[in-house]
Length: 281
Picture 1: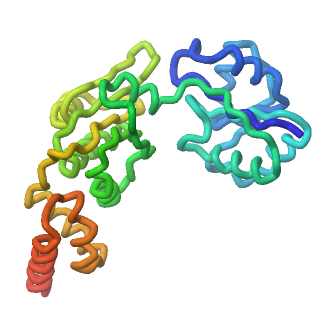
Picture 2: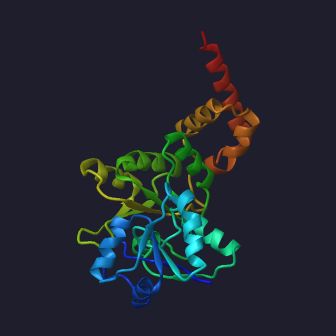
Picture 3: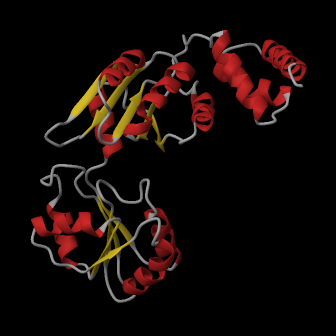
């Protein structure tokens, strides 16, 4: 019975890989890679010739059985395009399937973009929450942020360049002008970490086109957080009303993140309902 190894690979600089990781990649019978073209570059750099197969979101249904079959014959390594596998990729499903069938699963730790960004952010590292990529849709993104606005832990997100500006606007509208660190190209030649309030980040990336993948590290809530403005609350109410939520449901969901009394949220919701209904043809 083989072992499934979760092998962390460099997030940029090819030197950021352990001797143990290189040994495992040489010794296993198969490497399951998120993108075989990307992984071949790493293997070629270190003169490794282990057999490769793809394992990603589009191939996982077909490849899962194949990889499990390979594990019955010997060891298999799972790698992502960069960093630690099973974070923001289908690797966790392979891990779960391997464990259910009794295969040992081992981690070969190493680079991880969220942790790398956290430790250079200058923000508290003792408690943090990682949420992966922010939702694509603005309404879903703001809903998530409203749900966690009162969380005291440092917050970590991933974001793409074409959504960064919209995401920063929503972050400021919902969370307020907190401190943020925005990391890109970590460990690479053009590594950049922007640190400052979210408003300054907006100005920075308005003047400069966002390039590359971004990791956002944001200060958690403090006990002295200011309540939402009336405009912030009204925007949230309109979005939740559009989703068909009742006044009581809306009041219950917004009382903590907004800092407004439940009674006032309930009243404002009913007023918006009447205004909306009166405006219908």
